[in-house]
Image (cartoon, rainbow, N blue to C red; front, side, top):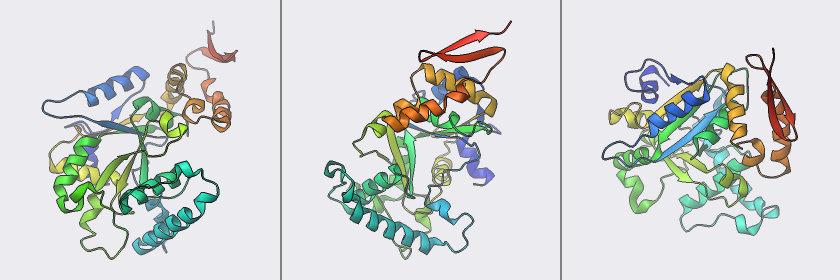
Length: 306
């Protein structure tokens, strides 16, 4: 994104993104963003990323990075062929109760993409959560040597703006998806992004309060699309915001989240999540400001060195 679009993700008039060095500062910044505004109905979602330099391009769009042979037509081909094959074979291992089934073709596609995304497939979706603390966990629990970030959006305001920008696409309340690179006016649709709740009836997505953003085009940069909508309404920092968290603050924030029972074991129910929580304990034990930590009967004990 260029500098003009990045301005949509900062507080109005700010020259840089907000920074939170402590858990309390993070809470204050979140609370200031979600504070109700007159004559507006606010609905908020959050996305944590372990590297503050990460953008909001979905995994499918990122396939072009370092691959000069992947163009727009190739992305559509990869998406269509992958979705069709996934749908044709998923029943072999998937409980029939979890098979996507909706009346509209668009809804069916999004629900299959949610399932693919859930299991590591490359899709045009991005994961979000309704919890600022779950988002913070995903930001601080990986890549501890790098600054991280939490992106925040008023998804309701973004949705309302998109429906005004593309009224024909939202007829009959159908989510607009472009499945062909030959679609007319496709250039203008690169700015269309929608938010949809998770339709996967499983413990993980319930624990994570999962949502998704979906672009009309697979190559859509979701941050840039939302920024254009925000700037068109002169709402910088009101509907979209980004908080940067320095790498030196990751361990202390992880300990706060651990005490709130926001752990890998809780967000990924099952033995895999429990094992992942054990693997991440090493970062919780990093000494800080003369304080050492150790686990004692499942509790994080702290002692101050004299």
